[in-house]
Image (cartoon, rainbow, N blue to C red):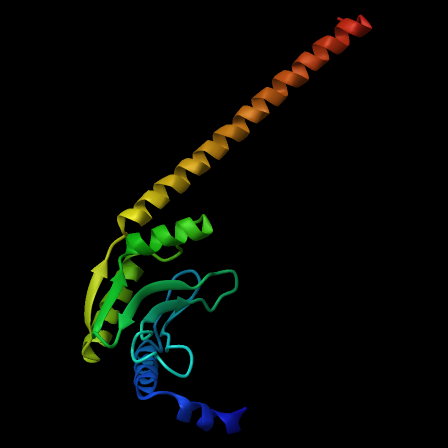
Length: 183
């Protein structure tokens, strides 16, 4: 496999190489940075494939990769190296996405997330990339409310089913007693 690596690298377009270098540099800046219950490490993903389609597929995701089993990767933002712009997700945004997808809370504190955002801003500014923090979109907020409502409805439906089942069992006992003549 090692012999093929120079060939693969030679096939990459100039832009893809440039963005892979950016990914490597950003990821390296977070080398000793770990946060949250999943012992997350930060990495900027390089574009996949041999080309970025002239920059059209250059968007790179800043993600948190868990080092502990049972935790999912978390997207913390995205970087567009062509436009030299990055969007970093607010804690509320990341927590809502995690809640919607996995049905449980994010095991990263708001303080840890703020630390991540501040370090990301510094690292990206050093790479001449402007950053902006983004909160949850209206669509994401609606989806979150819908999921919470669905869970409440599901809980209510289960409770109603249990009550109906208990009532049915009580009626069955009364009918059985009536038929057998046992009071």
